[in-house]
Image: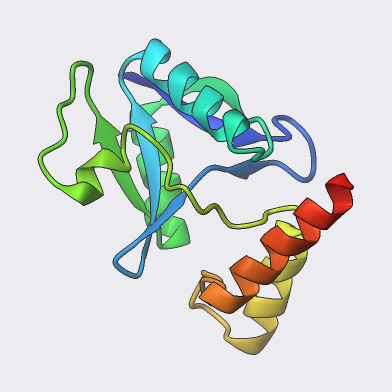
Amino acid sequence: MRVHVLLYDSGQDSEGIHSLELQGKTVVLLFENSDDAERYAGLLEAQDFPTPTVEVLDRLEIEDFCAQAGYEARFVEAGFMPKTNEDRLLLAPPEASRDVTHWQDEELDASDQDQGEGHVEQESDAAQVEAMRQRLEGLF
């Protein structure tokens, strides 16, 4: 089965996959419907997040990748209806997104500090507010 995932810098050395932090787990969304994936990418762009491209991949391959990386793959079926607040994040990104401009540097730093854990801790609220303040100042 083919699924749609959101990739940044597709085909480049800096390629990355869009993920969410949910309850301490890194979650990668696998969309059954291409329209759902495109809509999610558009919502990220509307939040001034880097615009991902929607790529079609084999579901088993991406699930294997996620398992090896310590990520959780979540399948979002066509017509999915959220039942919880967490489920809503499978259809629309959270309002506060993490800055991923230097995601590779952060991953390298994290792997140097903690071999094998495979994820970077989420920024504190204060750091997120400071990053937002700096972006807003940059607009002026």
